[in-house]
Length: 474
Image (cartoon, rainbow, N blue to C red; front, side, top):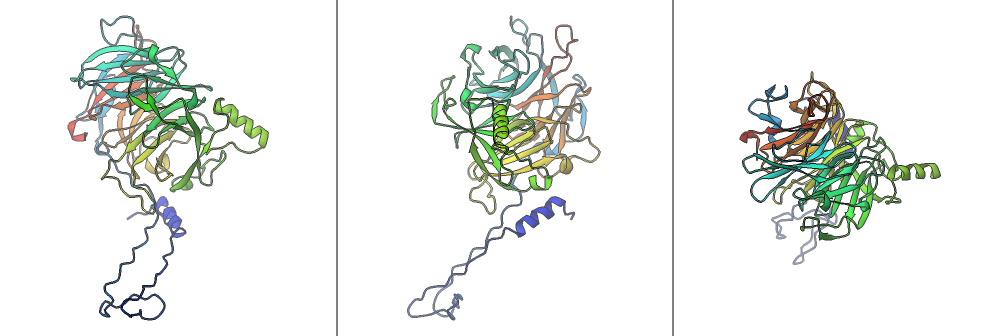
């Protein structure tokens, strides 16, 4: 068996963290006594009964008990027959929208938006679904594709207009889409996938910064958000309660709450986990309230650093990108050895500045780097080139897109080489907006600068649908 550098480091980490076990003396019964006064357990034949077993101490986990999904078993890629895109054998691909063109013939006055970026899928009551997609453009906005239960594309329409460079975002448990502006004073805009732009509203309390993506955890009343800056932070908005959302469903109050940044133990106040060995270790985290939450956070950080000569609150994460939460249902939550809570919810988020994917255990306040180029890329393959949008499938697969010329969707396999789910040839673009239907049977994504437009010359983007065979579904 080969022992990796990570294994050695983690064993060293464990060696310094063992807990001492205190011995307890038993009380007397019916005038009997123990064999001496040093707490030695009674002999079971001396009339004192069978002693209680002393529980063995649980050593701290070396890594979170994550598991691979079924897509880790995909094979080599073959030509899909659509725009030269390579996909696994048995999968199929179709083009569903092209920037500058009508996705649905006969639906007037709506052209698919340029530079499609982050997206999500929302189930509908009739068995169909809606795929929403941001436009990383000026003006930005969000477009929606409405599918029937059989997968037929029925309608296309806008749900947000006149915003700025909408990069990624996040679906809420109450059925709305949080669309994030990637500008210095960017806001989060909430949209209804079945609604109109007039229904959308912004939520300044969630902070002003280069928002990238968002993920909601109802159990803790939190929205986790990434920031696409070289000295960016991971944010948490702790909602003050629940209110009626724009779609009429009960959701979190996104206008009242506390905005915080994450600090990794030993890497506070702007410090960066430079060494991968340190970043790969499970570390404790805490949350710190931001200063001046109503101001652009990059300016606030600069003001703190210039005024005090010290770093601003929060661990530095280089170029925060996609974020998504994986949940474990009750009865299937693995215990995190040595820590209080079982694994209920893990926030995965990607950082393109160092090509790392982090896993944050929400309930135990633990973090570790779970994917990086040095450990996990398959021999002979190009390294990750700016990891970007991220999604977790209904089957538990963590899929990460690349913002670089290799243009791949990667399946992240815990502590093993990643698998390539698909690849778009040609370079000069990026893959964006990966999102699965609730049954895991279809995956939507875009090539952001593929040939498109009315003439087919302007490189403004195309959106595709990958069909996943039943053997790779839940």
